[in-house]
Length: 194
Image 1 (cartoon, rainbow, N blue to C red):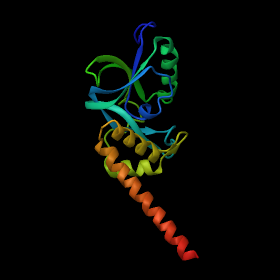
Image 2: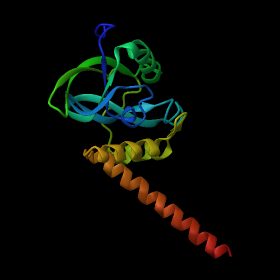
Image 3: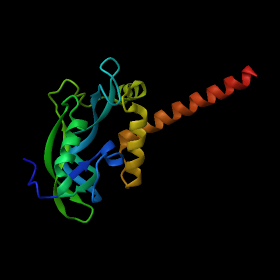
Image 4: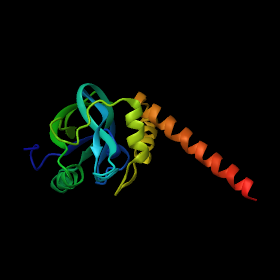
């Protein structure tokens, strides 16, 4: 049971939920979750990839600390928000729904609904090397668009709230430099064709 029906609901976001929650909320705060870390540890078969050409998305994996965003949802929207989140996050059941204590930027601790990686699920990728992550992200595209856009959007949002993520920073730099290189190549190719 996720708290009482008459209580406000807190939701912790660490990936796309931060910048595209998809539900109405009364309050949004920077928050920290201890005991879990943000990790590109989930093969995406739906939103940012396919079973044939998987992308790579974030999950909460065991150990460490994760800075993200906590949303307070009014009690009247509690049930509909939980239903929405289950439909969104549990498409392939790769996440486990949990209530975890998060610390808000004010210092207050609240119990928040979040989704952690299921290490026993076949889509759990574990800790991959950077080259493999980059290849998967470059190639991934699913119902929500390009995997590369997911990575750079998440990195940009984290920077906006004062958080640096080394893996997302590195991947974003690689993606941006290869994109700039392709654009320059196309521009020079266009000039040569004239």
